Image (cartoon, rainbow, N blue to C red; front, side):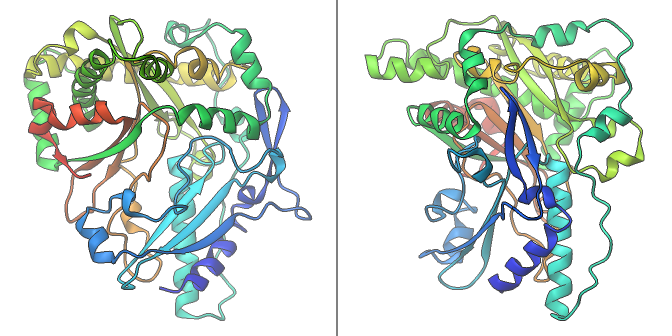
Length: 450
């Protein structure tokens, strides 16, 4: 696999995604814009790293990112590329070559403010398409026409204006402002990212991957339908969210009990990330939902930007602590379905066009809910067609989230078609993940990958 060809095709692809070469600018506290100046581009980084590990060993370890060399992935969720905001790289590519030349890893980092999962998939398909054309004929100059739209103004245009007072579901998500969140919003993106990344180093954050087979998902859905008295449609996402919520909550509570009587250093570390917080009566799962499937407008099909919005699912801790019987699973899954059904066109309108948000609103959960253990952010990418991305050398063997240090996050990826089912990547305290690996319900429905 030619790294030079990949590099060449990558830079050709970002001609269709010029926002990747833009410069970040903080317009006012907490509000960012990306400026693309053809005379002053912020060219994404493209690097190559040689691994001293054979690809066969990496494959035998189920593609565990821990075996990748240092520097291959960017283990942070924050902008940390430089203190000058305009110099922060918004996209980075690292090619990892293995010792035996048996395969490569494409480690792709793109700022979430630029794309969501849909936009990421659009870019990867376009990059692969151009690379495939160049691999067949290096003199080709016609790469077809791309109709990608990057401006977020399209959302304001196609999403209707709110017609009702603020919905109760949005009230539940509201967190009052404070001095600390306003200070965090006032900092430049680079300084803010460095501080938040430094705080994360106090925590023993790790990543684990689990596989749930297609057969198991179907059995869980049938079980939920059988043990519920509603005619609501139950999706794969509903049952997977319910299963994760039950096993994860039980694991978090066991992790918290371990930190209840520890030394000062451990107390400070756990307090920063919720292990030492008071017990809550409710577990909060946050669903990331794409509005493209909920607003009927063909223009959204070409929009590559982040169109994801959030909805909270509140589940009683008392229920989640019970043995994971079919009845308990059904109750939790129905809660997920009802919350998902509340993502109406009016809800979307209030999120997108409901007025200018206060400058620190996006930082309030990070600042004031950091000490809440009973929470999880879940993003389901399992419907994406990552395994059709062919650069000319075949489709990927494995697509996954690489290592990150942002805790209490779960991401669902499709498994390779030959395997089927879903890979679930969980990022949290190593202790919590260890409890997940031995949770009786979780081990019954999933296989540990790494």
